[in-house]
Image 1 (spheres, rainbow, N blue to C red):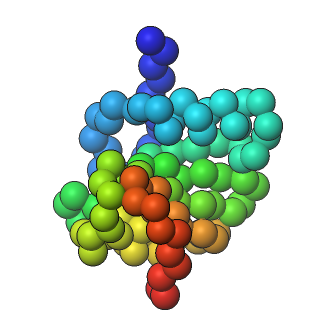
Image 2: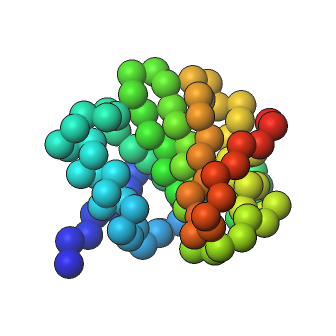
Length: 108
């Protein structure tokens, strides 16, 4: 088993230890082999508890936030982290990956 630690996006942010899994390994491979992005991070709000984004991908000065849920249904609480990081400078897309079959877009 290979393991690596994902750095926090900003030093001032609250950081909890996280076990990274299959998605982190896939993202790392995409970065290393295809150059789809420069670096990726874990993001957590400095002020709101239990508000985090699993992956924040950086390419130049642009970011994509990705939240991963092992659920076949999307709950409003699943979007908390993605909504919380909406003011991040350079943020483009916010993506929720889940076990459901439907592809959906949300406003805001």
